[in-house]
Length: 368
Image 1 (cartoon, rainbow, N blue to C red):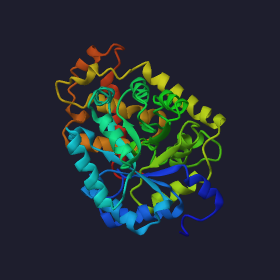
Image 2 (image 1 turned 120 degrees about the vertical axis):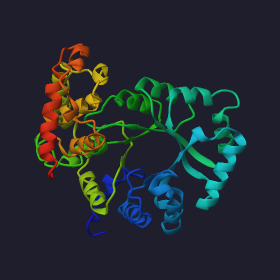
Image 3 (image 1 turned 180 degrees about the vertical axis):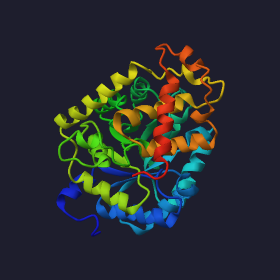
């Protein structure tokens, strides 16, 4: 554990972290090392689904349970509720899972990607929530949570179903739309876990603009993680890591604690000003997306603010490379101006696409 350290501040920081399974490498041995390293550093929670780690998530979790003290951590199992059609099928699934894990009960059963429509369906007479309560009474499930796949207002209504002890939702410094749902959850004593704090890779590399917002923070990944840790309603931040060095860096960042309210305001002001500037040209309505030449207009427009306002290029390059591979890049544009005609702001969309294409093509040779 030398690369992580073993000081009390680190212990305090890691207790608010969890390890998300979705970013773990496909190789089970590497994934096992990362999980073991995380648990050894004091991270107390692991999030897992059967399809993670090349569809070996449950097998990997059983190995982790066998070789690590059971009291050292809890885990959440992402339950594929949409595949289960009867109570009998549900209990067969649950009992087989417990057999594979060699456990008497699940710590946390997570309704994976739950929508309000599904929640209302499951809450009806004879629905899945009755099965869950039956499993609780039998001692097979300790807690129930959900990972949200709906609007903030819908998340709040799902919380009102009163069946859940936790909610997992997306939150990061550029995506704070779910904050009202987080506030509401905490007011109802529902634990809030957040994922996507690195913006799906947007903040995984340094940005010269983001790095100068908060004095003393010179790394964008540090800013992103500590921003989420600074949100008082957040109980736990789930890390998406694919390597041991990345894990060690995140643990070191967490030791410094969350951003202060004043520092979060500094970040929010930059984001608000940038968003307001971009919204004068685009509100993401998607009207420009019907390109006769099949240029990926809306996808490229999402990349532009990252480049122009935040100097983030690594993530856009990866995305644009895929668009070029699919033959949907700017080079297909014949300046028909259909996108401009459809735009309510009369934005010169081809100019923005040309800028995005030029910048990202220059960066493709290898960026840092």
